[in-house]
Structure formats: C-alpha cells, structure tokens
Image (tube, rainbow, N blue to C red; front, side, top):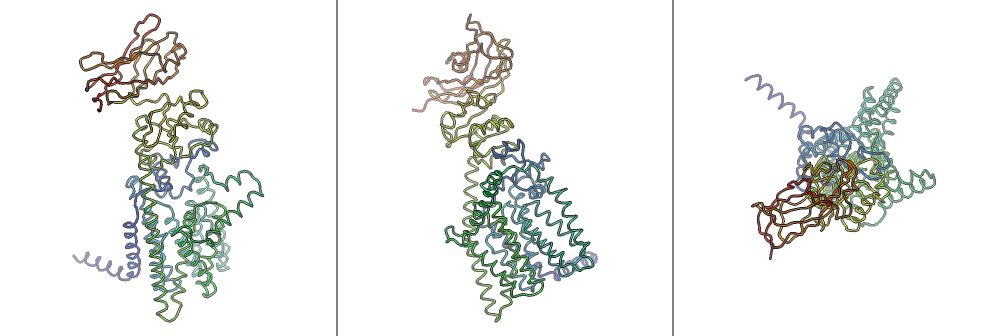
Amino acid sequence: MPGLSKLAQSAQDWLLARKDYMAALSITAVALVLSYWMGFPRIAWSDEVLYAVVARNLVEHGSLQTTLYYPEAIVRGGYPLRDVHMPGYMLLLALPVALFGPTDAALMLPSRIAFLLSGLLIYWLGKRLFSPAVGFASVVAFCAYPVFFNYANTAMVELTLVLIALLYFGVWVAALDGPRLYQSLVLAVLLAMGILVRETFFVFLPAALYALWRWPGATRRRASLLFVASFLVLLVGVVYPLSEGRSYYPNSFSNVVDRGDLRLIASGFLGNFGLQASRYVNGFDNFPEDQVRLIQSIIVILGLVALLRFRKKQREAAGYFLLASLVAWLFLSIFFTSNGWRGLRHLMMTLPPGLILLNGLVFSLRPKWVRISLLGAQLALFCVFTWFTAQALTADRADHYREDYAEARILAENIAAYHPHMVLAYRPWLYALQFFPVNVIYRWPDSLETLQRIQQHVVIDAIVVDNPVQRDQIIQASQAGLIAGKFRPVNRETVEGYFFLVRGDLFKEAMDAALGSDLTLLGVDTLTAARAGDPLPLTLVWKARSDISADYALAVRLVDAQGQEAQYWLGRPVLSSYPTTEWQRGEVVPDTWDIALDPSLSPGEYKLEVEAFRTSDGQSVGKTSIGDILIDSRRQ
C-alpha cells in the first residue's frame, strides 16, 4: 500500500532526525528499569500513603481530604481536614488512579514519566547551553545520580517537581536567547504549578524576575505586567483556594512561630540554619547520606567555578543554579526538618542545572584524556553511591512496608468487623490505604484533655494501644465519663502486642431483638469457634426503649444440637454493676460477660441463647438466639 509505505518512511525520517533524543530517552529508560529492579516498587513510605489516599478521595468522592489526621490538627482546625502537603501532586495522581485504580503501579506512574521526560529535557538543555556531548553526559549523570535514580520508582513528589523545575529552566533559557511575550505567561504558570506542589518552589521566583529584567526594552513592561498579573491571579484564584484548609503539621519551629515571640523566632531560625549548615561540615556519621550531601556541595562549588569561568548564557545558567540552591537552603532553615535525607529531597529540584554545568566544565578542559578520565570518575562515583543508597533505601522501604502491612492486617482482623469510621492508632499507614475509607488519628494525643478536645470534633470508634496501662486509663476515663464512647476491650490478651478498644455501641453481629416491652438487644460480640475449657468473650449491646422500672436478670445458655441445655450462666447486666432500673430511654449499654466454657463439653455445634427475667417474680420477658458456636475438644 503506497500510503502506508509513505507513512512508514515519514516516521523513519522523523526518528532519524531525532535519533539523539531517542538515544537520550533510551539511556533514561534503561536507568528506569535498573531502578525498578534494584528498588522496592511498592507504596511504603508515609508520604506515599498520604498522597495515595488523597488521590483516591479525589477520584471517588471529589474531595482533597485525607484519611490520616494529627491530633493537634483536629484540635486546631476541626474535622475533616486536608493533608499537610500542598495539593498539586495529589491532583496529578488522581489521573492514573482514575484510569487504573489505586494500585502501586498507577501511583508510581507520574514519577516514572517525570524521570523519562526529565532525561529528555536535560539533554536538550545541555545541548543548547553547551553541546550534544554535554547533553548526553548530563543525561548519564542525571540517571546515575543517587537521589534521582532511587526516587524513579516511588510515588514520591520529588521527580514531578524536578520535571516542572526543568520545564521552567528550559523556558527561562529560551527567554534569554530569544524573548517572546508568551514565555512570561508560561513562566508564571509553571511557577504557580510548582508552588501548588510544594511551596519551596518559590526559590525560582528571582530567576523569573531576572529574565524579565533582561527582556528587550520595547516589550519589557508588557512582559512584566503579563507575568505579575497572571502569577498573582494563579496564586489568588488557584493556589490559595486549593491549599486552604491544609492540616496543621507540628514541628519545633512552627511551635515557636505560634508563640509570636520575635526573639524566639529569630533564635529558632538561626538554630535551624546552623543545623542545616552543620550537616555539610560535620563528619560522615550517616553513610551514604552524608557522602551524597558532600557530592551535592561539590556540585554547588563547581557551579561557582562555572559562574567565574563561563560567559553569556552559560554564566547566567550558573547564576540561576547558585541562586536557587542558596534560596532553597534558606527555605530549609525556615521550614525546619530534623531529617537530613528530607533536606536532600528538598534540594533535588535545584540540582539538574548544576549537573549540566558540571559536565560543561568537564568538556571545557583539555586534553581529551582529562575529559574522559573525569567523566569516568564522575560516573563511577555516582554509581557507587547510587548502589549503596539503593540498598539502604530499598531496605528501609521494605521494612516500612513489612511493618505497616503487619499493622494493617492486625487492625483489620480485630476491628474491621465493627466498621469503624475513625480509629485512634499510631502509624498504621497502610491501614488507611488498604482498608479505605477508615480514618486514622495517627499520633497519640499528648493528654486526656487533648483527647476530650478531639472528641468535640469527631466520634472515635476504635482505639489501638500497645500497653495495658494505657488501655486501663482509657477504660477508666470512659467509665468515669471523662471521655465519650464507653469504650470496651476487644481482646484480653495482647494480639501481636496490641490491645483494641471499641466504642460501646458498636458490635460485630446485629440482632435488633426485642425482649419485653422496654429492652432491645442491638447486637452481639462473640466467637464462632472456641475450645472447651477456654474463656468465651461475649458482649451484649442493649438499648432501653423507655425508662426501665423493672430489675432484669439475664441468662445465657449453650444449647446442643438436640436442643438440650449444655451450660448455663446467670447474672445482672454489666457484671451486676449497672442494674436496668437505672437505664434511661434511648440509652445504649454494652454488657460484657465473663464466660468460662466447661472443659467436659463435647465437641460439636451449639447455639447461644440469651433470656431476660424480672427478678421480682422470675417471669421471663423474652429470649433470642445470639449465634452458633463450634466447640472443639480441649487440647491435652
């Protein structure tokens, strides 16, 4: 077919004309595959889970709210709240989630695409600023650089930011070469997009102002007005509304700022600045993190060398890189983080121009063998540290995933049957992701008063603790009316180190059985299988349909397959501590029984029944079956 042949020839010609870009893309694709093979491509870190649940909320509910909350955020801002992060990345993540569902592969797709496109952009920028050889060397350096390589197969935000920053840098370089009015608008849009992903993207604002200052006099005013107007409109009309309602994130510097003491604020900033600086001058305590930081410092220093050595647009690119790096460092001192690796992540978006300048410096050297030696040394150094950081990060991600998956499984097995809407627990990231739409308060409140204030905003359905003292404090506070919910324990002994408490009016099996004219059995908690001689946990959840004047006693029976009573228990509700004469209309009462199964019970299926009697005359007011239970013989 002539038409098809012509189309194939046109495609071949197009590919041949762009074979250098295809080669750059191939290099980046190979690195992406290696990153997948060496990494742990599962949602594992807490930030990834936060991004994932918000993206899924957006797709399924049209909401940017998260399902993970800080106690301090609820106390300050009420409930529900948005995530502590800027919302731009979650808006992007919502697209693959809508297309493919909230799977690991879908959530990592933006980072993978950003990695591939960043490689192409770096080649284009290296070629434009220096030469094709510098472009290819910069692509290799980018792919081998530890932080970029190891974040390529995650759902973290960093590579998306790197791509936006590279697009911004590319437009900036093009604007210096051949200014066009539309470029000022593109700079404003990209700057707003970056800020919507992470507010530290403001580090690139000075570069835009410089480009506008360098604009030809005839169009400088129009370009400046277009940039300022569009940027302000985007900030006020898009960034601010989408970011409003972000959850409060507690850290030491924000707590100082909240006090409003200027002296403390100044000393806090200086302390944070000193902390960031100390990470670059202290000894190598954390391998390989400190060594990667040293490499980053060397690249910045070489950026200063490039500023002094080069001329025209190459020199301007060096100034762009140095200014962005310096402002980013100042931002890190303001937005305090004690995590050194997190500091490296914040500086990632400023680094690609530095890699281009580094390779531009190498190719400016003579003779050829010096260039080849330095390029080989650079690649070897990056690959060595990439190998070690890949091992460290992969192990860290695997440990996080294993730990959090175990927590998610334990929580699900013990409290999912109660269909809780809000759980107070520590760090069960994957619980919120895998057992959506459960909401989790994932830091323990600092006091009972904080818990009371949280309950003014939200109803807590279940509480997970890891020590009996805390469990008993919650139960006692609940019984004394200090906190709402009448919480009761689900398990007597720890399950994988945890105790589970549920709100008193929650139950596994709904009954809705009327016993007499004023008593309803709402639901039951018990086992479906047990061993003769073992304790059988049983909770009956009652509701008073009216103020109760009669004093009721309750009988629980175990009935065998022939309808014969096999075992019998009798008592007043709530271990005889809360007689029905005190129950008021509409009140819900959880009634936990302490039942010991007879060791001589024959194996088989039994029915559990409950019956209510008036104590005044022994008259039954009704009975109901509350479930079947399989009894196994006692282990000898």
